[in-house]
Image 1 (cartoon, rainbow, N blue to C red):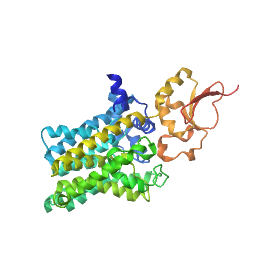
Image 2 (cartoon, rainbow, N blue to C red):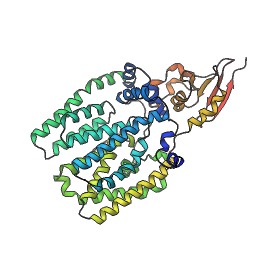
Image 3 (tube, helix red, strand yellow):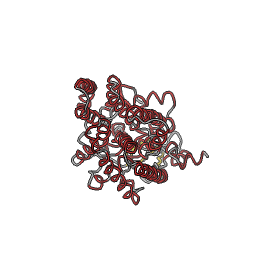
Image 4 (cartoon, rainbow, N blue to C red):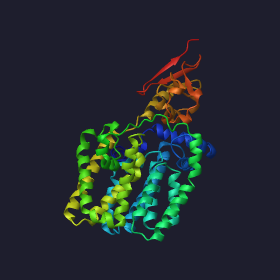
Length: 437
């Protein structure tokens, strides 16, 4: 039974090796609070997640399981707000809650990032909480969630802007609109000091980024991408994606027909529709100049899309059609998960480390030929003994976590005799070299 759970279900993500970004999270969270602030101001994300992870590791340790458990906890709290939205906003009760909860648990995007040691699940949790507090008009909690979100991920500014647009276009009273926008403004004003500090400190804003400019394929795939989190360069779902893409457009298209009157008059439908459409298409347009369109950055839109579809299934006049659509979406989701669990696996650095450790002694140095492996090697070995081999510091791009790579970690020669080096290449193969005395 345990073997099945940890090989055939999303729990398999728990026990895989850390990948570069997760190792970066660990290494950054080891620093002091002051240093975390300084370092993140020169990187690509605000500091809140690293503060929380630091405290989490002090309590639970720094194993792969411990680091990822923080995201899994956020996943649990996200489910709580998901259900509360269905109950308090969509007015769904009883056995139907259990049925619709299945869509949450089979969603491929949430399943994957629930087990990753990064800030994305925390971001999804806080942004979803902000929608819940906004739509239930709990202003103080709305203000707090916005502020926490802004210090978790820069895309929270898009969430804030989308919510303000919804409030302006809603049927709320003038007093309610002013009250909500006032709290949104306060949260953003408290974020401005960080923006100023970031702009003064960060030298990577205009540097080259690894995300490619989106094209027609990415545009046509937006609903599918938001729902599954699929990234085309991974290739694992390539031959199956067309059917899922067409189905998602059929879902969205039919929902627009079924909900056309409510989109104009019903604030719930309007807010849910804005939740996933405005941020995704806005980021897509921006990415034509500055590529930023990546599913995990837009994880909050995936939550909004699920809840929007549930509203359509629940309140459509055509119940048989809704049931067929719901079952089809569920089956597509299961199929995607099966393929993703099998194929979307992180590089097995843990096994490599186990093979290398018998060759290590106090004199051994670890060299990585690919800078992408530097932080991961630091996690699995003594980080003071890990270096990047045969590369200039200027050649290392900012997006690989360069803020945590000192210039003295670059080397062009094996260590002086009698020390030796274990050299890891980009295929995660290793060789041992030693200088001649």
